[in-house]
Amino acid sequence: MASVYESEKLKEVSKPFEGVAHQLIKSVFPDLAWDLKQAGYKVGAVRYLAVVLYFTTAIFLVMLGAILIPAYLVGDIEKGLRLAVIILPVVTVLLFVFFIFSPKVKTTRRATQIENDLGYALKDLQIQISAGIPLFDAIVNIAAGDYGECSKEIREVVHEVESGESLVKSLENCGRSTPSSYLRRVMWQLVNALRAGSEVSIALEAISQELQMDKESKIKSYAQELNMWGLIYMLMAVVLPSMGVTLLVILSSFLGGEIIGESLFWGILLFLLIFQIFFIQFVKSKRPII
Image 1 (spheres, one colour):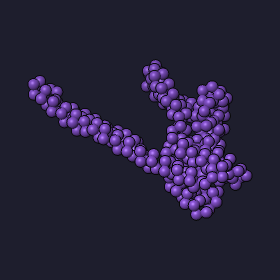
Image 2: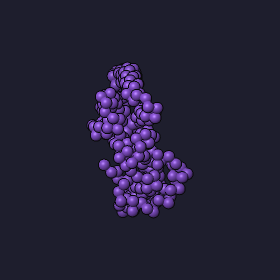
Image 3: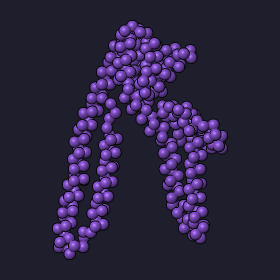
Image 4: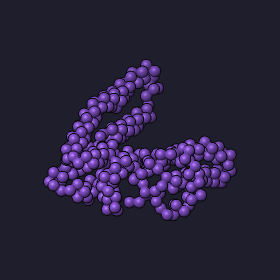
């Protein structure tokens, strides 16, 4: 599906920012084009940055109006200006940084998704080659298979070959552009095997085993981390609240019951709720995708 940055309407409205975008890419963001390619965006770096500048400027103006218009209506424009000076620069910079680093975040996510299906795709490719199917035909089958982002990467190879490029050159191009280090190694191994005339299935078997070992290593590492995070959870969600409340009850008995009130218990409950939501999301984000 095309991204919003490929919209022709956005291209037109962001044209005034292309000059500034070109200068920023030359001086500040020279790697943006590469990041966009690895993230799978079908848009140039200048156009992407021009759209980002347009978005950031538009949001800045909308927020400025949202602050100043109510301030003008209540007759306190000075306070509105002070609020705008404090809030808008911070929000604008954060938005710009978010848009600029979005391709890198997407690249990391795509690499994880590719490696999630790469082991199964390699096994399929290895079985087909061992059965005597030509390498290109096997690659076409992988591209047509249900291997998610991995199949999308392989489709680019098939498309280049069908457009007249050699298979070796297409595999090299895929190896350069893919965000996955493992798929990159698969492409280089295939290129080396084709150039040397060696057995492709042997190289695939070695990479497949290494990928499997890496997954097992990630699972073991995650299991060890869970022990530590489980201990932290017990301390923060069970031991600290119960002992803290007990200590407060004891202190309250000496101070005439002024410390403990209903609001304190609600505060502790709110803290525990926020902590558990944050902790669950944090542990979930650390879980390796296998």
